[in-house]
Image 1 (tube, rainbow, N blue to C red):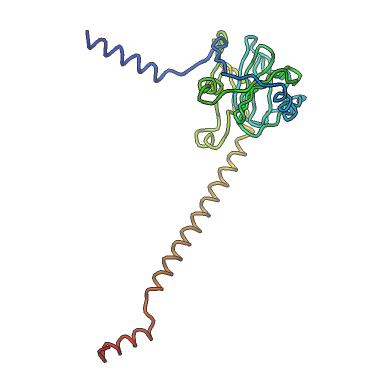
Image 2: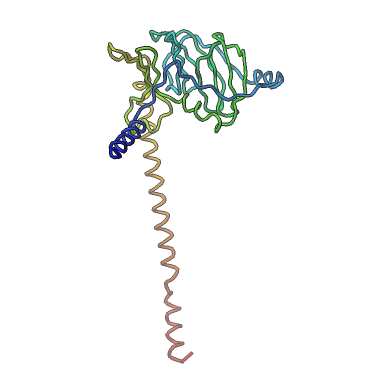
Length: 255
C-alpha cells in the first residue's frame, strides 16, 4: 500500500514538471493595480504618443500576443507596433507607440491594455488609439504571476490552439528577440498566420558572422598583447654584458 502511494506521488510530480502550460481565454489573471490621480493621468497622457498605422507589412518579431473570443489576434511587435488581425489573419488596425523598455499587450473589456514594465503603467486604448484609462501597476513581486502569463506562447480558443515559435534554428534564435512565427493548429492541421523568419534569416546570419569576426579579432589582439607582456618581462630579468663583467670582477677581488 505504501509502495502504491509513493508511485502515485512520483507520477503526480512528473506530470507537474513536464506539463506545458496552455492558457484559455477564460483563464485570466488580473494585475494588482493602484488608482492614479487626475494630474498623474494627464502627465502620462501628455508623454505617451500612440499613432495609428495604415496597413501592415511583416518587419519585426512578435514580443507577445493575445486572442479574444472572436478569434481576433492582438500582436505586440518587437519594434513597438501594436497590430490587430482578424480570425483569418487579415490586418484590421494597428498603432505605433513610443516606449523605452519592454511592454506587453492584452485584450480588455474596453479595447486594448498596454502594459509597460519600466514605470509599471497600464494603458487602456480604444480601436482609434485614444487613451481611455490609466492605472499604476504594483510591484513586480506582487504581479509576477501576471507577467509570466503575458509571456505565454500558447493560447487555446475553442478547438484551436495558437502558438508562437521561432523558425531560425537554435543558434540563430539565441540572437533574436521575440518570436518570428505565429501558427494556428486545429483538427484540420496547421495554418501559418505570421512568419518573419524568412525575411529575418539573412539579417540574423549577418549579425552572427560579424559577432564571430569581432570575437576572433579581439581574441587575437588579446593573445598578442599577453605574449608581448611576457616577452618584456623575460627581457627585463636578463643581465646585460657589462653587469656580467662587473659582477665577475667583484667576485675575484672578494668584494
